[in-house]
Image (cartoon, rainbow, N blue to C red; front, side):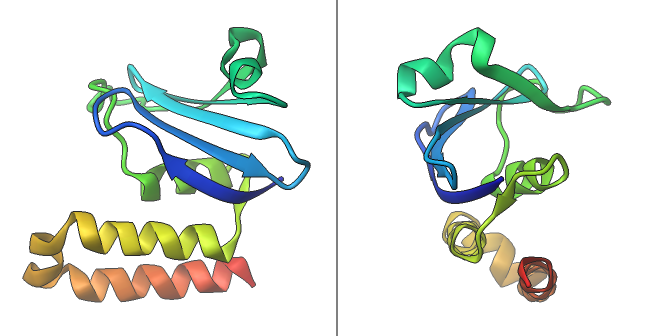
Length: 125
């Protein structure tokens, strides 16, 4: 299932996103207590209902139970369970990475960034 559009809707924890899937469903994605879940439905309320949610990743080492997850890591977790973000979604997350972490980029993560970009472009093709 392709993710056509994605937007982070919270700055605080738990980290949450909404997006649109290729079949027209709305996706509600949330990371809370070390668990990444995705809900799908025709409306926002329907996607948020517990019966429509599926846990797709669990932080096994419990090092990240505060509810904070980067968009980049969330996309990687979703791609492992069959949700394939479009190149537009990947590029948008890369741009957000650069905007959110200017100090890290200035300290040498630029090489890491370009290697990740190359990997993502290869996955998208």
